[in-house]
Length: 65
Image 1 (cartoon, rainbow, N blue to C red):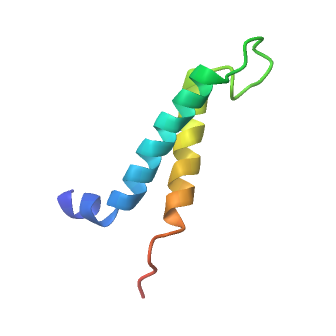
Image 2 (tube, rainbow, N blue to C red):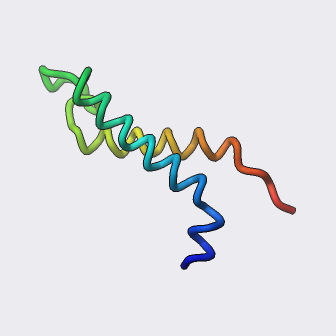
């Protein structure tokens, strides 16, 4: 388990940062009337932010052959 965490620390940090950013976005901007599916729910926005953070950070991971 420790080896897997060491190998994927960049991805895990991207997911964490994205999740925090998604929650902060929901808290500050959000959607007050409930018509916005993702922005109206803090859980959806946190998961969406984590997904985008993980995808963005994975662009910087070096490819191994």
